[in-house]
Length: 591
Ligand SMILES: Cc1cc2nc3c(=O)[nH]c(=O)nc-3n(C[C@H](O)[C@H](O)[C@H](O)COP(=O)(O)OP(=O)(O)OC[C@H]3O[C@@H](n4cnc5c(N)ncnc54)[C@H](O)[C@@H]3O)c2cc1C
Image (cartoon, rainbow, N blue to C red; front, side):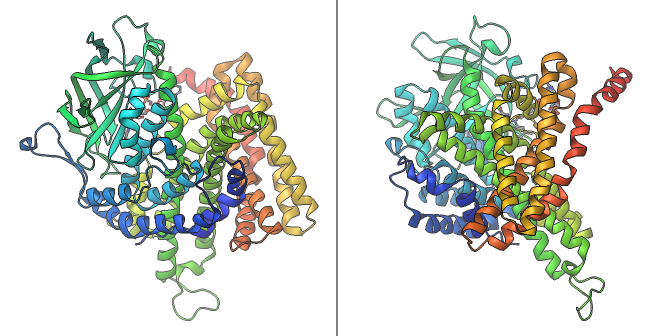
């Protein structure tokens, strides 16, 4: 089943939601020209469709493996074809699309790179994880690296010659990163020696690139306990000589690969550090701040994985529904393709609307990051930063939850075939399941949303989003067309529900944090639903003003989502505010 990027929908989202032309008008992207957009997206589609998608099933069946001892300590061998595919990705310059030209990048808007990565993830989730981790490493070095670290590592990471890995997790330190035990001891020459073990390290070792730049969280000898005593270190697989050439193999290796339910081609490594040479990134004991730079980049990209896998599931389901004949349908001679059955149509509509809402949320978040960095007006930058911070947990958690829902619906459309190992629908369902777990579980995202993002600014960023939602509803109503008035009739009460939930949450966070946290995931769900419905409506309004090739589709998606999802918003408000008492009673039975 070939994956083909939905270029019209992606372009529409870049225009209507990410406001790519406004971004270009900031003057921050001299290398960007509107005429470049279609060729870039088309080339990315060719890579995704013709190179990466054909390897998806191969990677599922023949995952990455630990090589024989004769290969020495550099043990992990990528799935068949992946090394060649990575070379195509690297040589196409895809890694550096949005990174600064000063370090060898192309200086294009970040949201454009996100659109490209959506295609990569849609075609091959396991492959996409490798550049995803490199993005995080690059962002961390750009923000926190020394001049020397940037000079030595960034050109190689940005060109894709070397890749990055993010090494946080240990057996006792998962969500609670502060519990980590890996030690860093000063060598006396400005470098450190790392001792310890990390688990679950994605693409921690492989043979697709010349070097792997590991960013490792560890604890210095005199560090305070907990997360305040965590520092970030850089340890390359091969040490780099003063002339830039590769030197000795560093003292760490992959000692095992996890056997997983999905993303088999993405090696999930147990890494052992036996005095590995490392340099400090950022300040001592401030590793969590540096880590969050990596994680914020990665969280948005993981949200996009939800979009990509959802889009792939939708395409597979649609193709199957056109092909598979069962039962009869009005106007169809003989057995009808199941696509003609209203229940299948409803499921496909739900898949399409949720994927598009997730895409819009992720692109809105990416564009906010671009405006936060590049808008000339400081007030616009500050507002965009607040929007980016608010949307990041939504983009990560809501989009990956929907990616799972959509993959699940895709299996259902395939009937019994969806349960067969060889179908893409089954693989996507298995692959997608990790998305709500890594890069901070979705439960942790919900705590971040209500704990940090809401409470920190007393709801100001959410109030600003709600003001935009209400303005959108007013504009829809003013269009004075039944379809748009119907949209406004859904948006307004949904905004009321989110506003009420926000007030309740702010009050509960101040007075009874445990009760508030019991509602956090439900709050995130409501916020994502309402924001998603808003972006779809906004896009439909934009298409009405200046119709593009996706105009009819945009309105249909917005209307379906409004009727299917926004209509439930008031019920979700009760889910947040009313359930905590019952949860407390049930807790008494368990704890
Ligand atoms: C395939 C795969 C790839 C990965 N790649 C990487 C990688 O490249 N680098 C890396 O460092 N790590 C990686 N991880 C680790 C991943 O980020 C962790 O698994 C994740 O952060 C959750 O940690 P945990 O598994 O220890 O679960 P736990 O932290 O034990 O969580 C278990 C459950 O408890 C909940 N929970 C935990 N704490 C709280 C709390 N305070 N309040 C409310 N609920 C809570 C969680 O939401 C979850 O539902 C990967 C994991 C997998 C499976």
